[in-house]
Length: 281
Image (cartoon, rainbow, N blue to C red; front, top):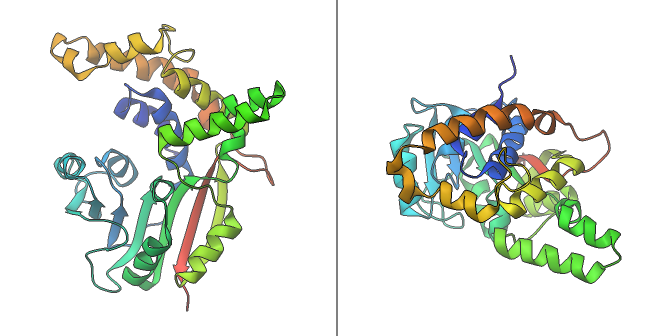
C-alpha cells in the first residue's frame, strides 16, 4: 500500500502547511527507492524528514548538519545511529564510508556545490548511490507570482518576484538535468536517473499558499499574520495548538490530496527534480 506522506508531513509541519505539501511530494518521489546501508543523511536538519523517510529505531546510520541546535532535535528523534556536526565540502568521514548518501532540498542552498559533490564522491562506496532532491530549472517560471506577472505583461516584475523568492528561500541555483550530469561527472559520478516532480499547477497552488503562509489555503482563511500568531511557540502552554494541529491534518489532508496525487505529465517538466547518481566505474 502506498504511504500517504501528505498526512504524515502535515502532522509534522502543521504550523507551516505549504512546507508540508512540498515535502510530501518530495518524499513520494523518493519513497520507492531502495537505500542500501550504511546511509548518510546529508543536511539532515531537525531530523523530521529523516524520521518520515526512514522511520525510527536508527534506520539511518548518520545524520550530518552544520547547525548544532538542529542536530540536537535530530538526535532526540531516534532516527540516526549518531549525528555529526559538519559541512558538505569537508565531510568528516573516510573514503568509501557509505553505500547511500541522501540529501533532501539541501544543495540549492549552497552557492558552490562543486566541492560538496567531490566530497560525496569520495565517501561513497564504488557501487553506492547519491540520491538528492532540488528545485528544478523550471521552478522559477512555475511560481504563481511569476506566471501572473508574465500574463500581465510585466516581465521585469516577474523576474523581481523570482529574485525576492530566492532571497526568502535562500536558493542559489536551478540546474537542468544536463547541468547536474556535468557537475556530477566532474566530481567522479555518473547520472543514473533524473525525474521531475511537482506539476506546474501544483507549484502555482503551493506558491499561493506559501506566499500568504496559510492564507487562501487555510481552512479558516485566516490572514498570514494571525496564523503565525496562533502557531507561535510562546502560545503552546495555552493548550489549543494540539486541537489546531488535528484540524489542519484532517482538513488539509483531504482538501490537498488531489494536489499531492497529481503527477507530472510524461515529457513535461516539474518544479522539483529527483537525481540519482553513482560513482563512475
